[in-house]
Each structure stands twice: as structure tokens, then as C-alpha cells.
Length: 339
Image 1 (cartoon, rainbow, N blue to C red):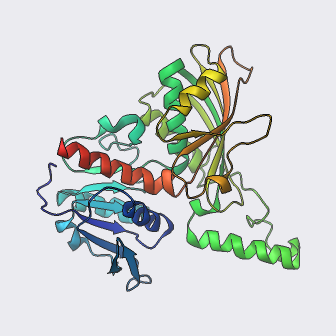
Image 2: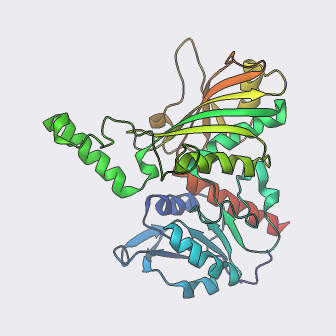
């Protein structure tokens, strides 16, 4: 490792949130050595205890002074916190893996999906951006298509779960769904996500898009290193708990055969194919919750371009969409440092 730190001290900022908790559980089952864990959270969560690899740790309030002892710092708090303090942690010589949107499009900051572009990370510790959850699972599959057939155009609609917003929103969905069932639809606001869909995620962006759509389009181009890639996204929030689904149509440069592509994906690390047309077995958010892979099904020719594919992608947005991707980055850097 390039860092001069003597111990594998890991700091988790936002340790009690959905993503922070998933980072801790993913670290626990990983091979990344952790000599000391420092979980940090907001004032309302400070003082809580968590268990990690058989030991108990008390969650502290946010304190940037701990960065001077850290080799790894995972940020999963608010964007503003990341923007202000990721550079502080990096200046202390830590590898900083940030799950916010603060640095993703910074030209000096690598935006990394380990299966695709680990070589974007430099040799010295610094800030590494973890992509948006819907971006990661899509990019994993698009990279396979690009490498095998060439990639010209992407049309994607996302079906994103409530957990992508956070624990409070997820609890609100549960509460509203219970009220809807017990008291009828008139008992909840018509804008509630309960038994509903919201085709607008994030703030208004540009060209009729919302923030989630713009993020996905720009991030995919950066990860695939193709600024000219034609891509259009429609992002929809749906009343599922965990797991994002994506319906995708791509135009390829050469002819893409569905059976061949199934075989390519089946042999790819971190990807599972569940695609039984006769038995109608395809991946769903509930099936893929608490699993690591990116799941792919409904692979077929779209028949709208000369060369194309259509498919369905699902992944646990808290794992491969966030925590697992971040821990995979750290593990890869640790292994690189041992070489």
C-alpha cells in the first residue's frame, strides 16, 4: 500500500443508515483485514452499539479527527458531508470510497465498478467515487455487450425500490401500505408510493429529465469511457422494498445472438442468469434481495434495430448497488498493495 498507515483501521461515516449498515455486514464477510472499526453517525444515532467480527463497537458522532489513523474511509452520509470531508480524509492519507454523488463526475476522481475499470484508480490514496446504484448493475452488463459486440445505443427504464431513498422513506412506505390495506386508498395521500409508481426521481434536471436519469446517463458514459454513447433513461420509483429492476434495449455494432450472450453472462464473475422462458422464471427484486450478483433474464432480440438485444437486470441496490461495490474496491486495492 502507498499509505503510511500501520494498521488496517476502517472508518464508516453514516454507519447506522441502510447503506452504512450494509457496508459493515459486507466487510464482516469479506477477506479485507480490519484491525479497528470506527463507526460514525449523526447525533441521534451516536451511542448505539454494533457488532463486527465478534466485537462490540460504539457508534460515535461525526469527528474528522479520526481520519488521521484510517487506512480506509467509507462515506455513506449526506452529499454535503462528503463534499466537505472526503478531501479531509484523503489529505490524511486514507483511501476514501464515497457513496454520495459529490465526486462522481469530477474529472479528477475515478468512478469505479471493479469488474470494469479498476485501472482508473491511481497508485496513491485518494477519493474514489462509488457509482449510483442503478448505474452499477447496468454498467456490469453493458460492459460485456461492449466488449463482445460493440455498443451504439442504450434505452433503459428503471424500477427502483424505496430503500434507495433511505430508511425513513422505506418505513413510510410500510406505514402507508398498512394504512391503505386497513382503511382503504382514501386514507393515504395520492402521492404516496404505496401501491403506486413515481416516474420522477430526483430534482428536475435538463432536457425533460430528472436527476436520477441524468446521473445514470452520465455515469455510464464515464465508466465505459465513451462520451459519445447514446443513452436515454426513464427512472421510476416503485413500491418494492429492496432491489432495483431495469428494462433495457441496446443497439449493438455487430450481430448479438441471445443464446450466445446468455453463455457469456453465465461465465462472467458477479453475474447470474435466470432466464427460463418456458417456465417463466426470471429474476425479481424479492428473489435477489440479500444476494451479491447482478441478475439478468428476459434476454431476447428486440427487433427494432439491425443489431440489438433486450433484457431485464435486477440487483440488490444496498449490496452490489452500494456496499458490496465499495468493499470490492477496497479489497482490490488491498490485494494490489500486496503484489
